[in-house]
Length: 530
Length: 72
Image (cartoon, rainbow over all chains, first blue to last red; front, side, top):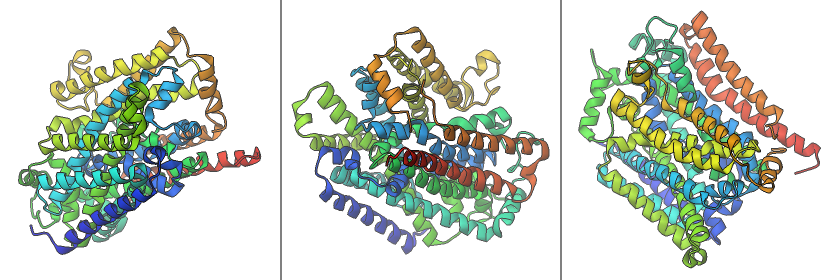
């Protein structure tokens, strides 16, 4: 299929805009604090939009509509819960962490648990997640460029990585914040335009509902109906499981938590979540519509026809492009069916935006961790102390090059593992973050134990579910407890996060609490009047 | 022991309560089969408006409390 001029034009304009913002940000960079946390001068609207685009990765834009396409309407509730997790973070972690105003993600753990060695432990878990997410984001950028602008995959990963590298190196958190805000606006607009075009084509909301039901009679069903849309949404336990899968990530993930440090004050931190929830809610509504109509759009579009099967068409996409899995193309194929090059061009820019902002957000988390926490504070490197910005820039380049190297020929398992990384960080580091603020008894031993146990345990469980039982959404002990690998559909997050919290609580109760001074500061001064 | 402010629990009950009611209505009355209905309750209300309302009360009431204390 030929690429039309608007697609190329909009994509080039997008690249020029973010390079321009990155270059301009360079002039405002005066100190290491500017580089790490944008001088704590980011306003509510910019931070809120930046939160949206950083938190929502290409897995949102490509993966969630695909999940709706496969699992059916019940998956809309999982998306709803992701958005509801945003305001929950306001009073749970964001306000207290902004009041404390640390610089790096590991600062909190080292200070709250009065143990500087936690900078290593927290850093290692975070770095693992960062490498997986940066790789996923680079693949995501290239996938949008490949599927929409028909740019060869290898060119896409190189161009995307270099542009992210340019603005992260130039302007650090200042460039990342402003670009992420612009990218949030763009990706939201792209999804909304595509969704509105689909609704108009199908005759409004009622027409959309009816057309989707006519194309796939099971789509709007729930577990209470005789035939649920899919095995994964076949029971209410499964639906509840999906609902909570990604619900608490916003409160604890490093790339959102560090954004709470960049705001002007606690009031701005709270208000920024309002702007994030506003934009992300609109974005997700659009993705729900696109995901629900994907099968219909693909089967009735130019690639389809009488008796067409969307899965077969998407498998042809995958065979043609040779990257990712067939569900990754459902969103692009659905929008392509509209045959409007302007919408496709905006979608390409929006897809690049969501992928680049996530990559840049993770790079900022790890360059601060490695430069400041490891180089300066733990290894006492004179170079890190005297040249923090230069070293952070070098670290940024290294992480992006590692991601690029893996992305050249990404093993499918590596891309899948980004989902594992999301949960492992919540279950291994989340209890220490949340309970460290709200429970005086939270102990240092519990922090170490939870991180050390949950990281390998969850990796084992995830790999066993995926490789032995057949899908990571199967409970990993299904074969042992029920003798049936598909007996219980509970996305692994649903058990891993409660187990992480329970482990943390038990170990805290049987070990010595942290020194009173630290407890007073974190559990009283920071949490009162959040 | 520290405890999140009351307004936090109001938001939590509002969201989980709304979701539970919707699922109950789907399971018992099949409201998901009313043409267009899932868009309004699961997408517009559940994904957009109620989370947005939570985010509003989570900054509005703490700010009012700060003003009452004479703070910023």
